[in-house]
Length: 427
Image (cartoon, rainbow, N blue to C red; front, side, top):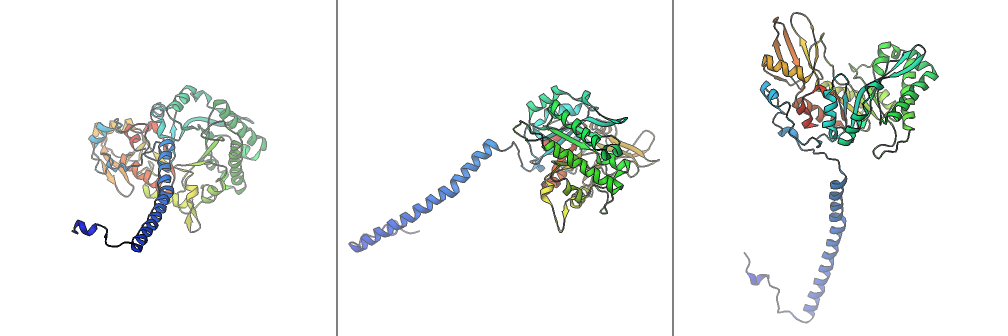
């Protein structure tokens, strides 16, 4: 360690040497002053501005790793679920998933209405399943206003700021709707008028699956008319100027099903269709669930299947279109399935209450199926028929949220009244 005297400036020099030394110090001081000023202007001020902006304007999103939640784990037990399912550990207004969240609610499951109000801040879009556009003779009629609940919408908006986009299903005979100009114009007018009269922010439109069922998508001309109708509807909705702070025009979210293989068929909604709708449609609700059924029992939505579906839809040349990915709401099921796997085939969807009842009755060993990234268990009923039950867990949901985030996509939940309360902890 140097002695103190070694650190003192020498006093033996005088005259010109002292002047030169003083000039050098002044030069160095000026240089350091300039560097310090630059540091303050170009580094410190911007950082302070960013901090102030984030505090004042950033959404209430907490992106910390949720793996530290006790039940985001593979080795889940039935006791864990029965004890913890109705406990919400986090602040119900804090968001963990930073991208858009579309929540579906159905009139036949009242719990969804309560969940929407309770966790309104977790959602960016809420879609009550209310409307059907039908053919009545040669006329079109819009049914469903009796489902609409203005009081619930007001309370929802007081609790958060999600866009309210009721689902409209096109049940009208497509040969009439798509081929006749007056019918097309009437359909668009009915939809827009309902939005304006009921103060909706837009709609979620489901028509592709209906058109596929009618067989019209196998005809190239009819398929083109179908595409044109959706584009015209989107353009008409975007021409309606709203006096709202969060959106400027009516919004259109379109429901699409996942292609079932790499080989696309006429009835599949593919990447070219996604590109064609990119301007007219504000979002795509992708139904990445119902992978299995009674005839082929298994997981509800294997994670690798979701990944490959996104790859297929977003492929553009040798890369992927991440700009369009931001418009996709990756479908996540809050329901499960109870399938018969011996003594014949059968079974079907179950809700959260059904799942809890099965856990209480059979006290099963819950297993993690790594390939699909889903939890399941097996039980035998009173007739000794074996069943397999797949139902979402915190870990399965968390992994699907990560998948959506990796693409920059949002999520859509079918539907929020069918799940368990603690699912909302990780949204």
